[in-house]
Image (tube, rainbow, N blue to C red; front, side, top):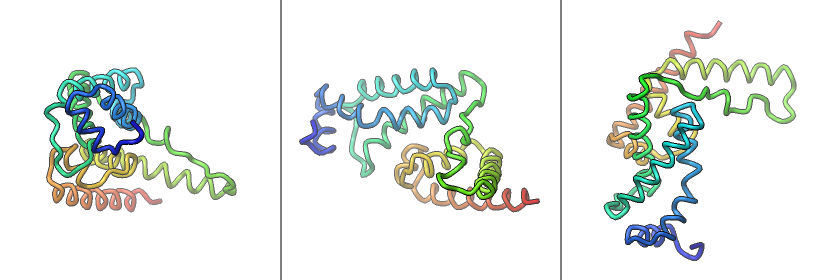
Length: 183
């Protein structure tokens, strides 16, 4: 499938080509799994939910319609809905701590500089944890998954303008928490 563009592969998948859907799966399974893992905090549940995302996508691929955003946004939306159901069904809020996935010490850093960097990052992680689940979700999509505002809007079921506004308010809230947390 390497000789085809993603759009061509997507058209073929929508038309029922299993090999084309397999190529899309290979391209996106890692990103979707990472997203689900961040949101659930449990590798086993993340694997199960990721499998369900792609099962649901395969089942409904013929209904997929291009809306000006990448195919991945459709997958993230499915994942978002399944994760929301998982949280509702489990009535708990357990997420993988960001510090488990962020390198604390850069190569070649002086020990004192590494300590200061680590403390600053710890403060940022604490500040992020004070945010609402919706704002934490936005932070993960924007800074961990590196998605555009348009993609995030599709995933979160909001307009792009609403995402920009939420992003702005989230950054202001983070700044306020960080300023109030300073010694």
